[in-house]
Length: 289
Image (tube, rainbow, N blue to C red; front, side, top):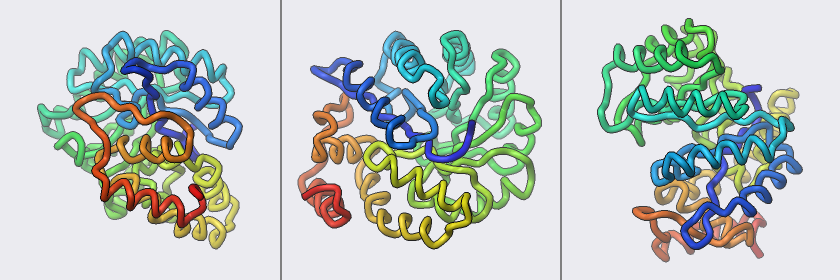
């Protein structure tokens, strides 16, 4: 279940509301183009500005639309342990295959607090849990020793690692048996080389076939072909973070005719200089004419 290219799918909006017709279209696009799994309402899905009702409705909609064709790993994290448990229970009840659970943000728990948080969720809800380590967003980092301890919990099965550090990944893998998924498209290839199993990808929103191929070719031992994809789209991987995610990826999707750009405040449109840089990159790799 936890391998390959798993898209952190955007949440499309229309007139400020979730556009379920477009979301259904995007899901079918991913399945047709070889995406191995879908994460709805993660950071890329703008979970911070979705209401609880919208969050739950979107998770349920994605699960019903996917119809078990590929795994759905529902975003279900919170900086409140109680709230994270509630979201995780909902995800399990509506048929999610697993949940993605971010480290608590803003309140900055200690490592012991993080152990209590994730253990409480795992003990409360018997569903596979993929932890999400992204200190640049949350202000707190899961250390390798903490991850190793949490890996002993039966249903904590993976981690989306977005610290931007191969040393962190190597330390995790050396200490425990847990599935490590890249949280940075630019580090997918090197993470695979040190033992990662795939990517929860932002770039897959616009190049699903290529991101899936990068991982598949690596798994098949076709390292040169995999490396070629890595370097062809290197600038794309980086430019999708030139401003706060998901602003650049939604801008790219708009440029490519995939959806109309719409984000919720406090997110906003890209500054023109960054927009033109992104456009030039997409043109150079053949995604725009």
